[in-house]
Length: 216
Length: 136
Image (cartoon, rainbow over all chains, first blue to last red):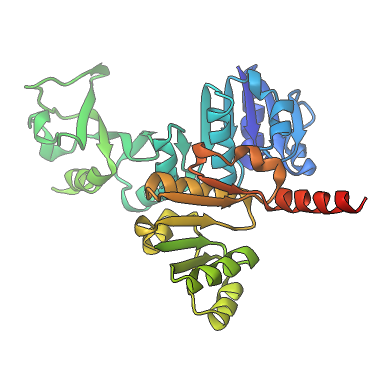
């Protein structure tokens, strides 16, 4: 893929190096020439000094032939303007923006620009680690709204139907590992001693899950 | 009509005073605290301190009932974002935005929710060029 990365800060430079090691064709834009040092001596992509939504800069970066544009500067507004320009004016197929303010992130998602809101994600992770040590999150979806988590099924649930813990829209049991074999529970499946259950849980239901595990 | 002006600098404050004189209801949003204090002491206009690019502040400013929003900050990105917010989220009928750097003029269009783009540097340049041409 031909990818343009706007912003060569810690995130942008890391992303650019990673993408290059995946053999993509990467061009990096930054206002500050010094920022390109973060790319390291082995970086082979193009670097363009300038403002990310300046027409000449974008042309120099090859926006007309790009497959993707990623806006990862420190400024939300710069990222929004860069991303929407790439999408609307240059019809770049894949455009993603880093937006720190979760309220703004929502608005720009509505315009069809997927956003990554690191603060929201980070806040969820910290809260989780502080408040819910009993279970093991494995994957998050979206910006932390959903999680795939793993628990040892507690004694109070042994023999109980899996359905009793399910909360539609908030908590689903997606897989059970029993004696080394994994299976998807069906209506009628009951928990057994030794089961490891994997659940997809919304952040609203985390407290409920915690209670489930802790209660005697 | 209720007019919200983003940016209390020279453009914003002057226009606010003019509009207020013509009996518009005006509110200025300015993010520099010192400037806000100064404006409060110098003008009768209502001023709130904050970032006009923040949707929550726009709610507070009751942007939804504004007939017009003027994005007059010294930052082109901010003006574009404010315009987009005003048009898309708050459905403001007339959105006016100031262009600081003529190199960015190509961006200031309907896609961003902008009804009128004010390219002050270009307008000034054209006026000066005309004036000098007459003298040449």
